[in-house]
Structure formats: C-alpha cells, structure tokens
Image: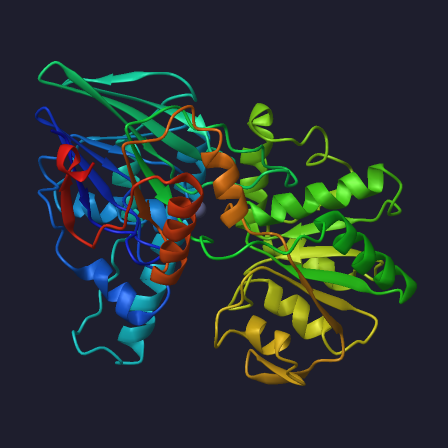
Length: 457
Ligand SMILES: [Zn+2]
C-alpha cells in the first residue's frame, strides 16, 4: 500500500513537507521552511530525513515560503529531480525564493560583522546561487491537466483560491492493480473574498490531507469593503494620507482591488493609490499576466494606481500630500520602504496607519496596535500621532466554517482524513468538529511519522 511520510507542517503552521511513497515512486508534496519561533527555525538546519539525491519529483501547492522555502536546501543535498507547479506559482516562487535568499544572506552577514555567531563564519541556509540552480529544475502544469509520472502515479492541480497559482493536488496511485486516490488540500482559500476565487470543490479521494490553520476559529464577519470605505472616507475628512504596511505578494494586490472596486462603485472618490515596494510591483505584474486566475478586470491596471519600483520613484512620494493611499512593505514594519513613510507620516494626526494582518510579538506593528506613543525607526524615536486602524479579514486561509463547507462538497467521505498545518489546539478542535458533524475518521499524524495507507483506515 502507498505510504506517506509526514516530514513537516505537523503540529504547526509552517514547514509543510509530505512524502508519498508508492509503487517504487516517491513524490514530495511541498518542501516548506519553518518560520516563527527560533525553536522551529532551527529545524531548517536538521538533516533531510529522506534521501534527497535520489528523489525524482517535488510537487508544490503554492509559492508561500512555508511551502517552498526548503527546495533550495534539497538541491544542496543533491536533489536534481523535477519541481512541478502551476505557471503562476513558478513566477511567484522565483520572486519569493530570491527574497528569502537575500534575507538569509543579510542575516549571515550581520552575524559575521557583529561577531554574534558561535559557528564562525555564519552561513545562510541557502543563497541566491542555490535559488538560481533550483529554478532550472522547475517545470509547470496548468490547472486540471493530468501529469503521469513514470511509476504509476498521476496527479493534477485544482485552484485552491488561497494565493495566485495556489492548488490542491489530486493524486492517483496504482499499486498491484489497485488504485488509491489522494487529495492534498495545500493551503485552502476562503469563500467570497475580494480578488481570490473560491476554492474549487474537492474531488472524491480515498485519503485527504487537510490543513487546519483556523480549525478552531472563524474570521471576523465584517466586510473588508465596508472597513476600507470607512477608514478612507475618514482620512479624506481629515485631509490626510492612509498608509498601509502590507505583504507585497497577495495582500497588497487584494487591497488595491478593494480600493478600486469602491472607487468604481462611487463609494469612494477616485484617489491615487501608490504601491511602493519593488517586490509588490513585480507581484502585481505577475497578477496582471494571469487574468483568468483571479477576479480583477481592470482593477489592477487603473491610471490612479501608481507603481513605484526604483528608489527615486519611492523618494518622489516624499512630496505626496494626499488625500490618497500609500501601500508599502514590510507588513509587520520590520524593515523596507514603509519605515521611511512612517517616519514622515506618523507624527501628523491627519494621517492614518492601517495594519492589515497578523502582527507578531516584538514587531513595530504589534507596538502600534498596543498603543505605542513613539516608534523607534532608524535610531530615532518617532512620535505616533497618526490614527492607528486595524483591518480584519485579510487572511488567506479558510476558517472552521469554511473548511466544513468545503468538506460538505466532497462527493463521498474519504476513508481516512489526515489533519496537517495547524497548531495542536486548532487541529484538535477541527478533528472533534469533523467527527461530530460528519462522523469521518480523522487522524492527526506526528512529525516524521510514516503512515501506511491501508492500515490507516
Ligand atoms: Zn500559504
């Protein structure tokens, strides 16, 4: 019977890595980096638990670093197989992996300059050269197109609605004349949100691997359109600028879409929207080049939407008086161009800073949310007089109700359902809910556990 090795993304929401072994074939689904707390990040340095050099295939569900960030590391371990994903995921992966490599290089550099490392010299997990090598191994498949691998495994992608290019993976495994079907949910998107399409209904599958990030919660039901309308109108009344620190890939485009829809509907006057992040600009171009995979018509190409790529284009914004919107990164205010804008705009009470998304403990974003009166930026204490707002509802993940709705579309119950990609409390709550409402068998695998599918259910 086929086996699955749960080599990451178990008991936590990063580091997704699942190895399917069947009929002499091995396919790794996702190869993500651990992010967040140091104890988790240290896992990125552990030796690969399987032989990477002889692995023939890696299939990627989407371009977020917690699903693809360790592929360059696989290559360092000798992997020379094929990395297969959708075309948009390939483009976003190049952008995000190069960015991750830069951050790794900068961190190692910093440790070495400050002599803060016990292992001198500090080395990056991977560098730009490793990423370039990896990109050579990528090959793309469109949604819904079956790919036959040499040894009795076939798979295809379905749109998961989580990020441009995101996919669930439907897999058919033929072994000893029997066919076993599997579905890897990847990260599951939400229903009825701006820009992203709904996740497609799940096909029938014998075994389902399901993410459970929000397994114990439901999202704030307030409409994103209403929140954005209120904040921008209020800022127009005060003749100020709205500054949004936002993640450059996905969230920035979603916000531009919402703003332009509100302006097209006459709920807001036509205002300039400035996107000031090189990565966000590139990601916007990638969104524009895949118009059939999201809901935007002309909302990402309007003339009031201005892209600022170069440093001089960014500096030109210093003269911008408003009213209008500046979107810049990083989302948690940890670095990047947003800091220059905040230095100028935070001390003025006409302006508004809108936090859009999770703010980790210890970040400037969290400090603003908690009412900090000053913010330390580039060695200066900048007074906070601008209005601080918080948008709810930007999460890319289905919540508990949405996961149940999606499961309700499955044509028949799976023989076994494995919960992955969740903190233990979230996975446990979802397992209990699925058990109670559907009566399905739910398994919460342990890290590095290898499960034989016939025995599992
Ligand atoms: Zn994701």
